Length: 70
Length: 450
Image 1 (spheres, each protein chain N blue to C red):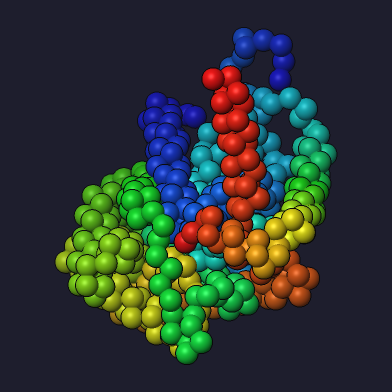
Image 2 (cartoon, helix red, strand yellow):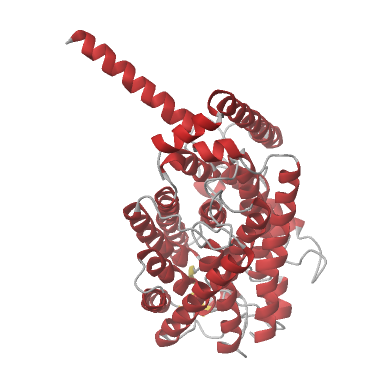
């Protein structure tokens, strides 16, 4: 893409920046996607472990059921 | 864009698909409301986030590889031909036509319309597994159906050159199978590994009723799903195309709307049939459930889903009866499977989408027996055997089996189901506990200022 819109639009195709670097952008995005799943699963495991450690006793669960009924 | 007529057609088509995308967004709003309404209070936030976050995950993965699969896999590959790498190249994530491109105004909106189908497929599964599946596990399954399995089935059976259309005469104009049967089969595959919610079944095997916590949210949610379904139907059509544009056996110069197979239909016809099949489903859903609101609304959905395979061609009265039949059978099958196999499908998704979708495909095989499946030469005509094989591929081969395998792997790694204690205390317990503590802190602070 040049620095002016004084063009015949019929001759214009892609106009986004960093043309030619699509593969690198896609690889970066795929890496973010996979890392997101890994971090999320670790967070979820830790959250459940914390929940059980803090509130996982029989008495605490019975109280939770009373506090937050069906 | 060539001459003015070509420019107008292109811009109309671009705008047409854009409108369908906005309408289809309401399906997702509806599913979120429905699921939250059907879940118990202590699981609301988890239920909401589980469904919401499938949006970005399916979107980015559909950009990475889902869209490419659709264009690369119509031949199987290697059933009727090779992998179509040339046809798929402009739809790869690295293609210049996938970015802002003044030379291509259609790929983006077409991609988005398909993406919204992907969300729907994943969201159907989401409702059935509420209140005990881990979010991380569900999101992996959502990517599987949203960006892999459903789009493979679309390449095979929902593409003008799909091998199922060519060899089997498969006809599924508004996705009884390619969205609903596969989503129902996927939900069932997950459910049999995941197991029922704690306390769902009594010691003698009979089911306890887990009553929807907020029936009004469920109701509005289902109304929104109906609304979004209009957009879904419109998105399944090519809005306007000339016989030369199709390039098949159609003669003359009459422009038309077509199905995804490029077989002619009209927006008027599918609008009437949508309403008549919705009505057939509602009428039967009300009677068979003895006026239960949940099943009456779900019956409306099941009615549309059953008739969808052939709603481009049916007479409205046929659409009404087919919708009613599908709803009746889906309702009966739901309770038969629940009682016999102890499958806890929290929202009846396997029945409403899976069984109704399968039934709709088979009925279409009989109703449309001998109809051309394609405007092109050499394609099999629509027939009951082809539709039945298609239903098995959708529900079982691409639906149940991959979901069962992935669920087994996740279960083996201890990542499928939330721990028992957390399920009992409620998936939102810690958040609710912290919120209550924050409220108490504010109350104390305000009292000190009084």
